[in-house]
Length: 414
Figure 1 (cartoon, rainbow, N blue to C red):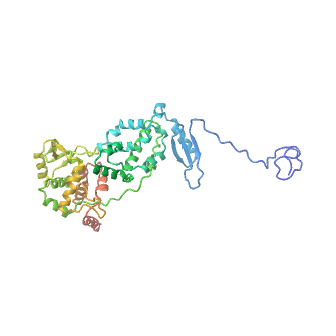
Figure 2 (tube, rainbow, N blue to C red):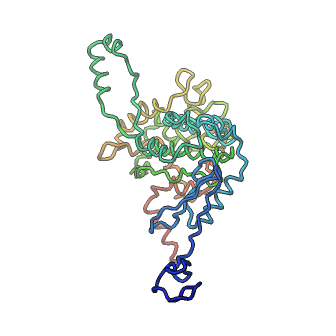
Figure 3 (cartoon, rainbow, N blue to C red):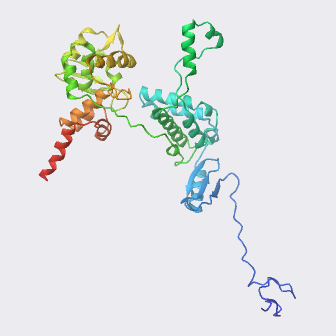
């Protein structure tokens, strides 16, 4: 080959001329363009070299918030720039997780929740105690996941000191040490799902406070254990006949009111007399959701004598003991289950788990109403649901087989 400058013969493939020293363009590799670094504090974009990943580009905003995975560097860059462009006050950025939770507790969304919903989130908040003092925006998803994975059922007895244990009588001391030696059990699906719901609320609150981007809610990436498949059932026709045959008993009267109205356990137990209008044959009450509160619940002919019985003998609450409502646990464990056992109504499966719980009276009412052809609008209003799909999805899980056959036979007319 010839040198590009002096035009003299040089060995083929030479990068430089061995006579004049000129770099030869034909054999010189192209100049590699240096990758431009982002300015400090403006975020980070990096690539995970994995051929199986469809979105290998990772984006992190300027305040250190993980923004997600993207299929191209350009999309990741746009996400970082969009996050940085949001007006995040330094005061909000410094908020701890406890500060975000406090802000959430004063938000309109939290105020709309019922008591049971607030109590559930409060219990979940206690589980996040190791993270309370941390900066909210710096808490990683893996830290939430670790709390979910290691959560255990809290023991329901007061922890005693060594001195207090010694003061116990031998039988109590033996019982306490036996309780203390029981192995810890992992928290169930419902408890862990409640923690996940709280994490979602916290992420949404950080979005509202403009601490993270609009797509910064990563709670859907938290992994829960498989949801249990409860094999619960409704009251059968023969079991309802047994109850009606023993309706002189007050507990049976209450059970029949539940089956006919579809009320939740605490809704009836905490209903006051002032909410019962015997003349118009309605009860006004409810809880849990906005659609469920202060709803009209008809008193049908079949349960009117039972409602009237409790109305005439009570003072403040429709169903009461010593002018106080009966607690959920008391009714469930000391009234409902013992009465079913007394009447010979099977309430447990082969593993000894309750499959006929007080809440199944609500399911029974919904299934009976659907089978009888009650208007979806009316049923939704009585049960306190905002839409009929909720009623169908959650409460039509044990419809009568004959009803299903008859409904499908209607296709013959097509």
